[in-house]
Length: 82
Image (cartoon, rainbow, N blue to C red; front, side, top):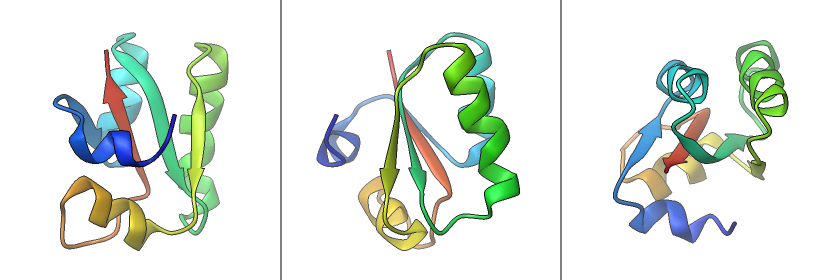
């Protein structure tokens, strides 16, 4: 799923903690993870996504992911909800 769909998504999560909670609840359609995010921070999220068969898309930078989400800071992870 292209990154641009995140910009226009009505329901989304921004940040690793919110995204993990949403995946655990089975609410996530697709997850986006920044390549330059702290590996330890996003590994638990990507492992959880694989366990729950949620697709994970990589984004080059936290800055880019934050901009697409409409926030002024970088984001390590974001997701589009079902």
